[in-house]
Image (cartoon, rainbow, N blue to C red):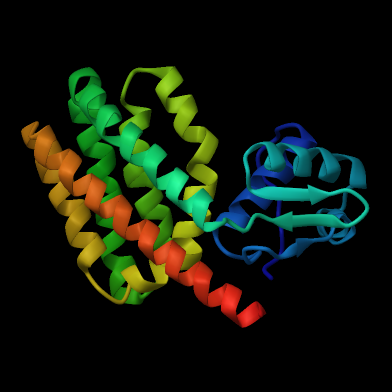
Length: 226
């Protein structure tokens, strides 16, 4: 695993949490992997207290599962979790898009265009981490510009898990094909035109297909474990 380095001067537990969150999203810790508090503390050069606090914050975000007397582990979704997560996204993202169009159309288009611009070289380089980050930025732009903090906060409850699943499971496929990239470009075009019936239909298909990939990968991993 790459060296874990801290940067911005936030509270120690926040800095540890943010670096660990990104490590989970980027796949430095695999889904279901154990995270040693001692290893993290030694890597950061801090005591176990801020690490323990960071683990608690990550557990609240659904990225970490803490098992008393056993240890801390990166989350592993069940088939039911995946279905519920996709249903949640399908309900929220089209609505966030409509609100973003009315509240800050130009800003949303700029952010989504920037994300798509980052996707193309990632596909060319078959860089699933860079693609996953750009993919996440595209979807998060809808909430960043929707003008409704409650909707944005609702998405934040699941955004880390979505990003981790995306990087670990769908992005390795997405960088080998242009299907996802083409769908994002079409979503942006529909958004810019304000064609939200078509936008919702494509977003539903896009998210549903991602869920199918998650479920298939989960099934394969479960079979390996057995």
